[in-house]
Image 1: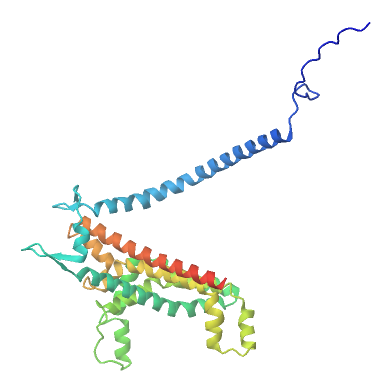
Image 2: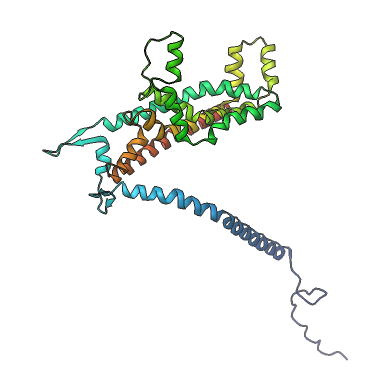
Length: 334
């Protein structure tokens, strides 16, 4: 006897031996992606937590003062120092122009630009002088036996153990009319009267080189220490002259140290204050002295802020142009 077949249940999801539904490859990939995303978020959070103290410190001692300086440069000077909170462009106008006290007309003023030009010229000269003195020094140290290098590096860094103000005073004693240089030249019969070195641009130039010479030597030494001496020997084996070995082998390989040393000397030399103040006698102003005067005796904080920002913009433009030029040269050679 045939009966009506019983209705079959609707097919459901396949079950695993434990009773749960089976998962396909797509579900496994989705769970794996979610796990990876969660791990990436945790790692990013951990990195930010580690960076937070450094970012906060940079914001506190870097961004905040620059922001205050930027705001002050667009305000009016207070009667007894400080600022008055009213917007004004007079600080930037004063840097480039001079206002007539009678008819209020503007005429171009070279006074502050000449101070900037003197600062740039002295800084470039000090950078070139430090390079001429620092490169042979660094090469000599790098070519010494390894046991002697630490002693020479110790002697190079020894001036940093003394405050810059004391070192500048020592240079003042050396450069004065009765200083070591003039006394030595007179006793040798080279000159009859003392040379007027102190309180001149020459004294500031010598002081800048003396102050920042270690900043040139150390990066140069770091590059020259890695120099493979076999390349120099190979150049000599190919009958290259000493000049060609220097210009074709040593200088290209030492270029990173040369660039780093020039930057480390030029930028602090551009904003130097103690050296031109003492060795220049306050008569040969540089940008740092100009800014200090505005915040001090002149009580013109907006103009001092504007001068500081113009100095920073000048340095940033120079560095940007150099980076772009280096990038183009790297692409051309690479």
